[in-house]
Length: 470
Ligand SMILES: [Zn+2]
Image (tube, rainbow, N blue to C red):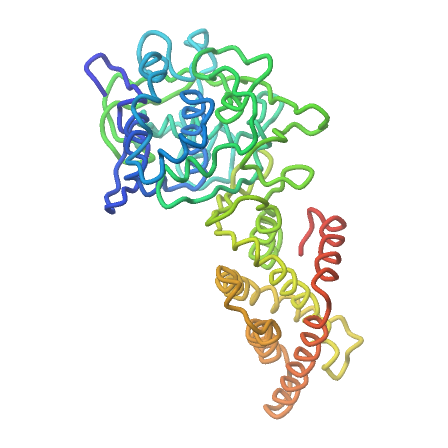
């Protein structure tokens, strides 16, 4: 914060990063780009912020350097960061990145001054809004103040994750959308890898005008402004409720509906069909709600992300929120196995589907439904799915798919039998023996099928059960 009471995003320290030397700190936009080769990654505590910040830095880079030639790309290999000469547009428009000054402010509309004053908690979904009952921080919505850095994080997060209601439009995609980003060896390579592969119209920058662009390009879409905002700076210094740092605080925000969500031509739903990071299967996918089973939570999202990772080569993560209408209830980040793991994942899914039936068949009364199996299997699925995902980080190491499937699922079968079978130890051992033998037979049959059959069946089921449990 400088003497004039300003907070310029180009130079102030607000982007949380982890440097390659292990030091964690906050940096401004200029340092983040100029030293991107020495920064391991953006390191916000909430995974939603990591995506929002990456997309904002990508928008800035695209604005500064709309075209990147092969020679440019080669020149960045092993570089310490983005060359200073590429960032002249930032210095020419330095004032557009001022957050708290008396003139034009970053992502704020002066015409809102004094109107629709709301608690600053509106900016970060972890904090309760005026009438929400489900939130991650259990405090009163009017008792918190944020530092300028946390305010910017919240404002940029709205670009990617803002829900719609009758007062406010959604972000560039629905508030429940999930994204996949490639993780390079440092921030510079992450920026290069996640830059849109297709040549898309770049369009005007959203930080230069409060008016929504007529035909938004990639830059505006990456850093969309679904809210009209004005930050009301407190007259006294204090402690930020979110990060704990001391200094200037903002206690309230004027908050009104902003730029309407753009609709991509040919699509009924409002989302950016060319979004380079969106996980989309005809339309954006989302995480299961908190009301669905633990088995669905642990198995569905990472498999959807693997199926939809497409040309995202290298190490990648999928990130998304669990949203109930306007309330964000969770934020999830999972690593995505490489594309080569897809057929293994589908095979594991098919095997998982057969377990309940084979368990039922080896009981003395196979015609009964046995609801106890469903609850026990759901309980054991979370751990099994983590084991499967870990193995699939290196799918080449799986030489014998039958042995691998048996290794993954025999503990599930044995554990379920042990927990649900009544009678003597001898009876339990016999049922366990019959169940594991049935599992072996089912795996043998599955593994002998051509992989195309399993993929086809899984796709058919995915279309039929979209939105339901796996
Ligand atoms: Zn803070």
